[in-house]
Amino acid sequence: MKKIISYITLIALFACGNSNDKNPLDFEDTNKSSEEKNSQMDIKYVENDSLDFIIQNPKGWDYDLGYKEADIVMYDDACDTCYFKSSITIVSYSVEEEATLDKISEQNMNELIELYLEFKLMEYSDLKLNGVPAQRVSYAADVDKNQSIGGIIYLVKNKTELYVISCLGGNKYGEFGKSVDFFDEICSTFKLK
Image (cartoon, rainbow, N blue to C red; front, top):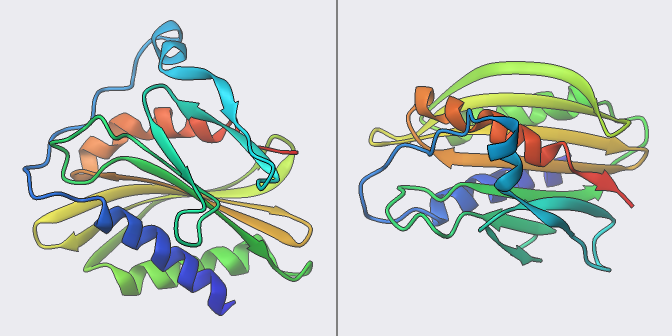
């Protein structure tokens, strides 16, 4: 399970590595009508022979395959003045078939608690993501006394494969809430091949 901790750290460090020295701005309000939300999503999925899943990439976002140890990192490169760039990182790795999502999630949360100056669990739920057992955790954290992030982590387990889908946005706790529906909509398109 040590590998899980390193992946969670990788995801968190990606968020910190995407910061710049400009002042933070609020996220764009994504609490929009269905028609407006659909216009934000590209019509094609990110697919690659090296990936055993597909996911829809938000319109206007860039992505990198194989960034560090991640399978894919999708990010909003248009926001030059954001303190952190909004991003979705997916990391997959093998786990024992008997490993439970509850145990994996507990280890992930312990790592996040140790990593951040302040960590606040916002919501935790079991669900199925396109028929596959998953857990969804949302949180808020202080990277330091001047930088806050909000995040959602989906843990998706298919037999011996675990997929960690991490959505991050640098913002004050309340402001990240405006992006939650947007991130959830993107994550709902995650499908195993």
